[in-house]
Amino acid sequence: MATTAALIWGEYALCVVIIGIAGVKLTDYGDAIADKTGMGGSWVGLVLIATVTSLPELAAGVTAAGFALLPDIAAGDVFGSCVYNLTLLAVLDLFSRRAPLLAKAQRQHMMSAAFGIALIGVAAVGLIAGQAGLSRLAGHLSWSAPMLLLLYAVGIRTLYQYQEQEVEDFTEQKADRYAGISLRSVSLRYAVAASAVVAAGIWLPYVSEDLAGVMGWNQTFTGTMFTALSTSMPELVVTLAALRIGAVNMALGNVLGSNMFNLLVLAVDDAVYLHGSIFDAVSTDHLISAVMAMLMSAIVIIAVLIRPRTRVLGTCSWASLALLAAFAANASLLYLLGGAGP
Image (cartoon, rainbow, N blue to C red; front, side, top):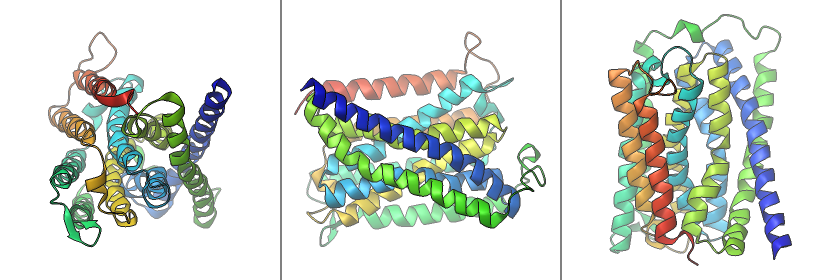
């Protein structure tokens, strides 16, 4: 038993390492693409990098829902990743020099967070409707899936139009920083790193299922706390790397854009889960993570709006402490409501 558990934890650690290393590379290549194409750091973070760093969630979700038939791991990965991503902002704040991180954020990030709240809200209502048997639209599909797809498209279009009207942060737009490498070459390397991320993401649901079995945890808890943690590794390494090169708005765009894309992943999961609507099949415990993710997104909006300038005990802003408290509450509630259950 101990040997089996050690082997499964080893597989989990390997997935984390693969996703972490490839995620670092994605940041550098994404920044190079932004530089060479003239796209803004916020927009690259929101769409290009956020989409690719969310590929583990997509790969893990499709595998869990469509092949392994583990809907709770798929849903837990989506909602858990949203909570982890927002917690990353508190971690980033610890490394932010001079002013708190959210005090340096562009106002457009409030729109990204607001669309994230709307998407999570649609998914949460879908979960409630699913428990009442009111989620079906046609066949096995839920009405929530097309709504999530439509709202995501509207959000991206709105943010793009807003981006066109904004003046880019010049600290993120330094000309010819990657003169030694062509756009074709950097795009190829970007694709290789993305492929590594996807491969690890496909492996993760099976590892999570084994982890739940050997540890005696239920799949909702495992999917939310462990699958989501590993699939959120790209966001962690990407945002830290983006902060390292001074691309604050790229880092924020990546986190908030990833949350938007994660809800799109849930719509895809619903499409590939052919045994009914995934909103009917999953536990209502996921509503805890959904509510916490919406609360954390609201905290981000308030912080970007009022721009906190002081740090609590010289470490981080009040907003970061609130985000950390929400994360701790989410983990505790999930464990108490069934983390140790079958």
